[in-house]
Length: 439
Figure 1 (cartoon, rainbow, N blue to C red):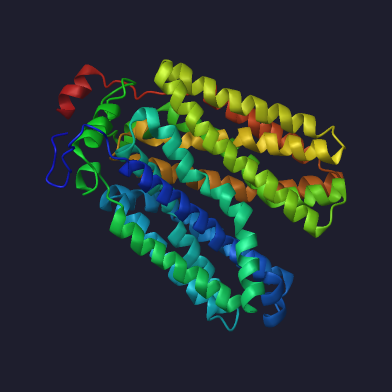
Figure 2 (cartoon, rainbow, N blue to C red):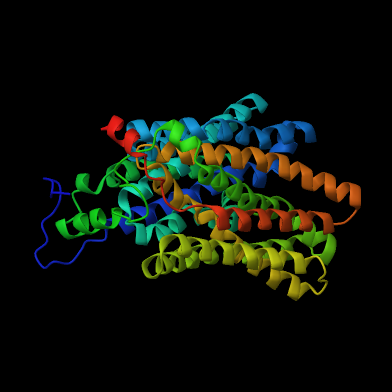
């Protein structure tokens, strides 16, 4: 990459660290993402009373977010491929902040429903666009930490979201003002993201020549074809490793969403905890998930630097999946409260390693299709999450216990392990004839 006019020339040979500042900003944005999507759940007891909402309508409002969120995954990835990640990330943040503000003006269910549908649609592209940005800004040996910063906002937002929204409502005495402040803060974050983020290192005025050269050298991965060459759609969706990636991510996310939605009920039923204790223990467990994902980013990058790529990726994801799966199996036979909390925290710590599958889209697709591949992966993942959340409820209702639900998690962890073992972590070489035709 020849230095561009926007690239600052280094005077002492040291690299700037713009790429890390961009991904810490993404961490903050994903955390806000989860705070905003949790806001209705926190305020629903008040809103339900004010608007006289039946439980069925409350369920519709809560689920409406996921309708448009799922629908916008693949289109959001395509938009990131067409218009570049900076445009999609900043624009999405501003739009979902505006829909959060719209909810503050609601006088009935129609406005709330529109707000939730808009919030889901606007938040949909953020992960596919972030995965594409990871491939464009991070060398291969740093993408584990890049993916960790992108995705750790999910458990952080789950841990802090309820505390933040509930705190604003208590402090201001109004759920409307809490929603409005959250929405304005999100819009401000989107504007800042537009000002600071660039889609490519060569476009950022803060990147010096040393950092630009370091990123370019790290893009030459040695794990298949040059990443500057994007896969065709046919090549992409006939690659078995792509479908194994989809299935593995489904297994990982089923554990996460299952714990996110059912863990408080499980702890209340098996450990007889009150609301205050549930909140405190849930905070600890979700914070452990965030710590696990950040730690996993460092571990993955270390392994990629020191071991052959295929072996490094398999060792990392299979180790995390195995520990999480065994922990969840053991959990089914535990009764002591302290032990249950510790094992749950440990299970989520290692299960979140699977969420670093977000490093794979640039590796398997090339930069031109990374957004599309991330969007399709997240579409399948979230569609299955809707099904699995309902399935857990049926299992618990029919069996009268959480043993079957925990065995379902064990099955999902096994799926993650098997898929991680089978994926070929390289893009297949084109046959000579195909390569000549493409040229």
